[in-house]
Image 1 (cartoon, rainbow over the protein chains, first blue to last red):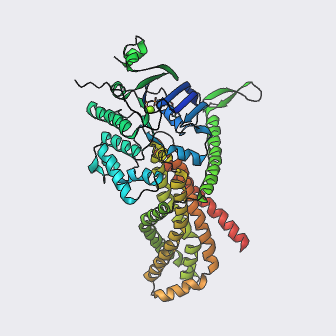
Image 2: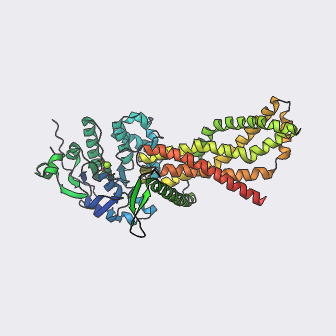
Image 3: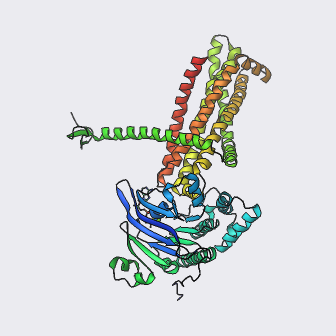
Length: 260
Length: 279
Ligand SMILES: Nc1ncnc2c1ncn2[C@@H]1O[C@H](COP(=O)(O)OP(=O)(O)OP(=O)(O)O)[C@@H](O)[C@H]1O
Ligand SMILES: [Mg+2]
């Protein structure tokens, strides 16, 4: 069988020193109404690495990354992205920061009323404003080829299968060359073959565009394939942090139940 | 006496003693609270719309697209309603005028009712159903499927891109559609007159416009602008603030229609009072 275990990524972007903190979260707390979802989360994402965040359904993984990009405002704690305190930015500064971050939504969030092409052009036209029509076209074709769906250009999202939607939304996310990628369950609901392809794509993006990524998942195969480092959430707190071996060799029942 | 509604004990805020109230009362209190917080939130929403309308980057292309969508989609509906309205109104008014031997007044009377009242209000009510529900459902489903969040992370202000363009498009297009409905209403009226008589269109129009003055047009046009913005604001508000589940899309569309129709009538009442006071 194919060994999915990831090889270490040797080189990291030239000008970005390895070890530079892309994201730093300290003491993050977030709840809804009377429900405490995140109690005390601290994490760091270093330049060029893939950090996988594991946790069972409802443990607040999506809430965590939505806080990072300020789709949700935390109750307490500080979030620094690329050295900026996310929650003290004004609208303009926030937009500038968001232009450097790619966010893959759990549901894909493709614009229903637009074709695949228009979906991909939307962020390009709004974020890379200086591009010419020709460059836009080239870029769209490039990312579509990267996700292996070059012929889907003129389809509407409703005409795509679940896996194709995932790939198109991944394409829409990487089209702006983000330096940080946030993936919310990139492989959930896909068959094993497609999942492996998506995992491979994530690694490719990391290598090709030198991105640092947080990958939210509860798919162990995807975690094994993509992780440089793993972190597990449980009851709103970080339960264990380490590399894949730490998790696989753990005797803790909760972690074993994940890695059986 | 039989107790019709189940009773709940709750602790009073003021005295700390527990008091009994019926479930029905509690439900009504909650409904009232919801109603008032809805109004408060809508006021904030309107303030936000104003702020974004006068910001630097106005989404002009999207605004034009919305105008086209609204006009194009509602035109046939408005045309048919307008024409039928004219025919029916004429047929219904005829006997009353005949009693006074004033059939020549028929075109003028119908023209005044269409231009002053029936045209704007019927058009606005139909559009509340058509574009109000459309906006509620569209924005609601965009909200539920995270498309609005996706815009947000693409450094696009969804308030500016989605809401402001739609509200302004409705504000501009509704008066235009009202004028269109008025025109077809008059045409319908001419057809109605000719069912039992023989009046040329030229004569009909000169009879109609001998009783209509600019003063009849102007307030109707102004109130149509308000109808348009009410429909746009309510539709967008309900859609933009839809809940998290798929069922909230239906709720958003439905409540958009109900609330905007109601508000159209309320605005009409206020507009009539104001016009009456000024003129
Ligand atoms: N906007 C919101 N309003 C209210 N409650 C929310 C909101 N977002 C998330 N929650 C609640 O927070 C909890 C965690 O949700 P979240 O979506 O982060 O889970 P998750 O770990 O991503 O799960 P899954 O793996 O199923 O996606 C859930 O109980 C959910 O009901
Ligand atoms: Mg989630």
